[in-house]
Image (cartoon, rainbow, N blue to C red; front, side):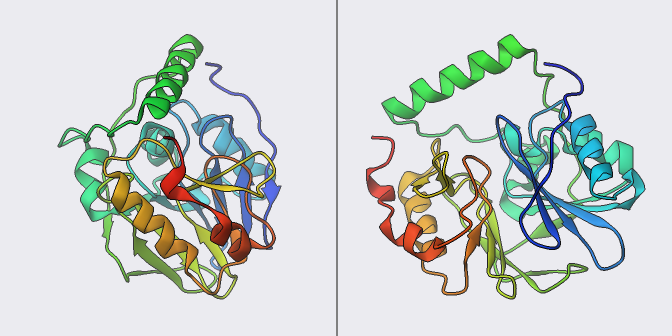
Length: 249
């Protein structure tokens, strides 16, 4: 894997950008104090590309204030340790995933369906061939729980505990902007017009329930997924049409 491959940020709203990666998109948020927050950090080795993308939208490394990890998987927490070392940003994550992110407890193994296992093994083989660096744990400064509100963002941000993909997976809901960061509870196809359950869950039925909880939110127009294209229009209709119970079987 190249140490640095530039990426082009894609603007979602006046304060939110998608940093698109082949595996695991990252989202950058402009904060009112001229700082920035990130939702997830991509694979290990992604930090140089993330910092370059931040510079393209006006952010210097010292202005990265927060890193919010939706869960503990390789493609979401992968570059958190490097980004903290480079910027001093604080890490926030779901309380039940914090031990896995810190490296103090082994991460639970997903209960793969046959289809999911084939997908997973193919992805891991590709990452190994690309030379993705080993995962490094990182400290978690703030453990988040259902109903918490994030400080310092342009508007109130609701933390939703959505277990199933991992025990401590979280989603972020911005009702004012009608925006949702679902982590891996929800994925989409290449056009963002078809939503699916994220594969590789530790507890499939809980993940389906989490999907349905997010799909039932009234004030969501845009869904910033980590895999696939963001849902930019008609989010409620797209989510209502999904059949997570039937995905990946």
